[in-house]
Structure formats: structure tokens, C-alpha cells
Amino acid sequence: TVCLSLLDENKDWKPSITIKQLLIGIQDLLNNPNPDDPAQAEAYQIFCQNRAEYEKRVRREAAKFSAEIVQKQMLG
Image (cartoon, rainbow, N blue to C red; front, top):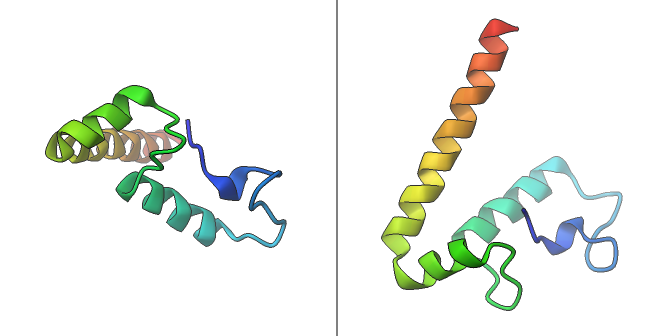
């Protein structure tokens, strides 16, 4: 779940927003979660209590997702 104002039609969404802007917004959200609107309560608690563990889990999920993409591309 991504709770990003750039994706919300009632907040900051505009048709002119680029993919690059969305990806930068998501990256910023991973580095600086919004304390007023945590989409994932467990992840937010880990972020607040143990930043190293949070970063480790984010890296693990990113690596897993990247591996899945590469595998799909190779298998076609």
C-alpha cells in the first residue's frame, strides 16, 4: 500500500505528473514515512523503533521484487 498524495485525486494528483515524479515521491516516502498517515502500521512502528531493521526489510523487499522482474524478463 502506498499512501502518497501525488496519487490522490483529492490532494496533489495532476495529469501532468511524470513517472519520474511518482518514483521520487515513493522513494521519499520510504525514506521519510508520513507520521500523520501511516499506510502500514507495522512498518511504521518498526521505522520508529528500529530504523536499521526497517531499512533492512525495505532492502530485502526491493531485492525480492527486483529478482522477480528479472526472472519474468528472462523467462519472457
